[in-house]
Length: 190
Image 1: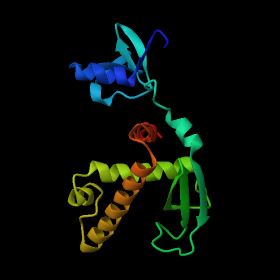
Image 2 (image 1 turned 180 degrees about the horizontal axis):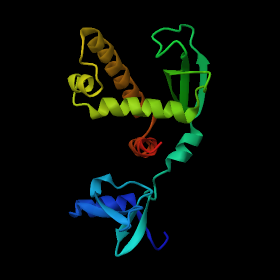
Image 3 (image 1 turned 90 degrees about the horizontal axis):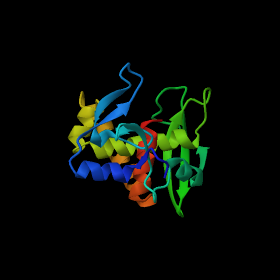
Image 4 (image 1 turned 180 degrees about the vertical axis):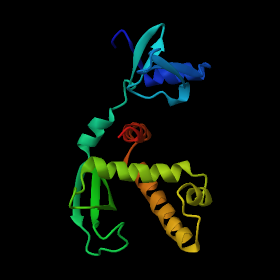
């Protein structure tokens, strides 16, 4: 390991010992800002022993980019084009395959601007799973995502909640918890 690197596991160990904040390198005149220790992620530069120190993956942790490279991805235009975001959008059936497991999911985009690609589709499903996992329950999900205004919105929101729940379960089935964590970190910055 280089002189000014610390693994994310070493950061977590410091947090367990009671460290609650770190100084994070930024572009301010001071050169750093104080952040909650729990928000430190791989790639950050934090102050350790008066040096900016780069946070690196745990030694046994695989970077998200390598995981993404090993994911097989394909898509086809869906037979039925309904419930589209707009008349310009098209519905696709996308499939990822990783470690012998696969997941097929719907994805919409405007083909005049782009077609489905692996990173955009992964971002979409990891975001959906994150929405489900961050909600305390279906009512919290509806409130947080603006589905609580009318009965029609509530029904659409409940359908979205179930879809996000299925996506989260599929991602748990396909990826290890370490892989999920690496991917979540990657897509939060995507």
